[in-house]
Each structure stands twice: as C-alpha cells, then as structure tokens.
Amino acid sequence: GLIGETPLLQAFAGDSLTEFGASTVSATVYSFAGWEPYAKELENCMGTGLLIDQVDTSGLDTLASHSISPMKTGGETYYDQSLWLLELPEPLHEGHYLVELSFNANGVDYVRQHFLQVSRYSFFYMRSDGNLLAWLNDTATGQPVPGAKISMDGGVTASLTTGADGSAQASDATRAEAQNGSQVSTLITVDTGSGTFVDVDSYRYYDQGYYGGTSETPE
Image (cartoon, rainbow, N blue to C red; front, top):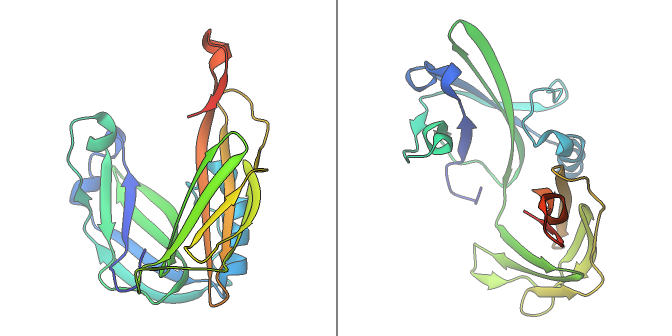
C-alpha cells in the first residue's frame, strides 16, 4: 500500500463459503518492529504462496481491530466471482504489518493472515534470460530514487544499485532450477538509505518441453 491510502486486501472465497459476502470480517492489524522481522516471515512463507495462518503474533504490536464488510469485485470468471475486497477504514503509517482476518461461514471459523507493507516507494523489474532491468520511484515526490541497493534472492538472484534515473541493470542475474509446475518465489529487498522496501515475487514454472515444446519458460 501507499502512504495516505486506505489499504485494500484481497480474499478468495470459493463456492463453499457462500455466506462470506453477507458476513462481517474481523481484521486485527499487527505491526512488525522493522523490516528485518517482516522480511524473515515473508521468506518463511514463500513456499506457501503467502496464503498464511501460522505467523506467531505474540511478539507483534497490536495496532487496531476493525469490523469490515467484504465487497464483491464483479467479473464473469470463476476467479472474479470468488474474489472479495476488504478495505481497512483508515490509512496506516509507513511500515510493515500483518493483518489477521477471521470470520465464520457455514458454521466454520476461518483465519487468514495478510502481509501488508505501507511504503512511499514503487519498484518494478523485468527479466529476460540473464538480463534484468529494475527501476525505483518515490511516489510522494514522483521522482526516481538514485543510489538504492537492490537485492534479489530465491527464484531470481541479482544485486543492483540504481543510477540517477532510478534504474538499474544486471547482465548476470540467475534463475534457480525448478521442477515443472512448481511455484518459484524471490525475496526482494530495496535499501534506499532512508527506508527499506521488501516484497516477494512469485510465479509458477512450466517446462514447455514437458508439453511437447522445446524450451523452458516461467509463466
């Protein structure tokens, strides 16, 4: 999320949760004591697709509790019809958070946790073979961020530093070996000198050769 905006969370509820749209979801917001413990928990959950309910919140600061009515996203596909949005009622300060959602549907109690980062920075990257291009902007000023140190580890490994225009390039980025159909995740940390942006990028890997093709490409 960006500074000054009310955070918006996504929740996927299939046909078995028909009561979800009419229910109220309880949302408890916890705060991490810095980006390092946030990044550690992100890394621990990378293999789960970040669909989590096991982060121990006993060591986190409890900031607020809210009662939220989920909103339908619309759309015609099964995915769209099963996707709900939950908007926190107030903006959060720049920082790293965990939001725990709980609700009862069809007589069953459900708990899910969402990682949430509020930052002024917007980070993008593209990769082709061993070449990687990244760029970093400050959304508060609309300006590029020079001198930021970017570290990527996991599915993609690279180390870069942004130039005066906020961009950075690497020709030696490597991609980890992956089994066909497996989920591949990369932990990204961006140290700007005045704050640290942390994120996880995930994709599912498919070997085209497995399906009769001749090459391997991530999806």
